[in-house]
Length: 366
Image (cartoon, rainbow, N blue to C red):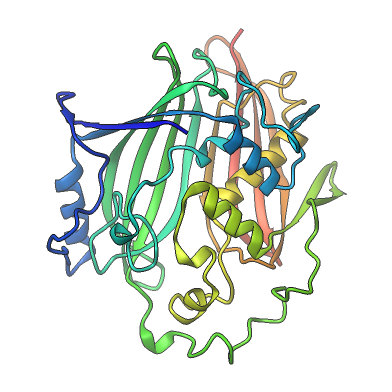
């Protein structure tokens, strides 16, 4: 992939580099979530960071294989060859492009990149949710396009969790422009930053504290080659079980060095999780794949989605079997022009616990 980077301020003045934590500088540490939010806002307000990258077919092929999907689109087998130039990206697949580009010494101790991260002690980063809007007045993202991504912080705020602990919520907007300047996609992401878990609550040894029996982590376990499905109330329920290998491959594709996704000792001893954690974006992609397999052809003759709103609610671990189901379905007309739309509610769930909710909206302008 070819990538170029520049940063523009409020007056579109070119700066030198993509944002990163400068080496050999003082580490900023705050006391409260409000102070951390104020510092991040102060350093990023009115700045737009811009990168340009070629969307190559190899990256798309490797993602589809990681998802155990031999066909990127119906009839397009990519097991031997990457998809050709002009192939549109399925919804959400852009997440494996425009990946972080820090040196290892610039990463946080947990391996996460520090771009737009909250200052300490609010360093424990989690993907909270977001919204994507596809702008159909411009061509879609396609293999072979040189696409420009702009990134800006929309808001940073101090929050409190249900248990009363402080956290920092960061809302980031990424927009993608195809050749000719058309805006193809807007991608708003929300991240939560918490304090690291107390050492008194960590697991002493990864070798002496086995994971719960309902999580399959043995190398002798056979993980399904592809998701399985069963019918429920007219729509299939998709069963998914991701292996540590799948999580490692997705981490490699997204250049995501966050240790909770591949380093079992760190995940259990430091982060107090029972196993490595499935990426929030990976759950989102699986949810959108369910939508396009089950609902896209019934949503106004296969029209692409207009938007998806989603929220991550509970973690999924490698070895967890979880399901993706249709929770609601609505169709109608809206606005003075009676624009037709369909809205599909989706749920990612494991053993009765909702892990992610999503709502996919399709609009057809006549």
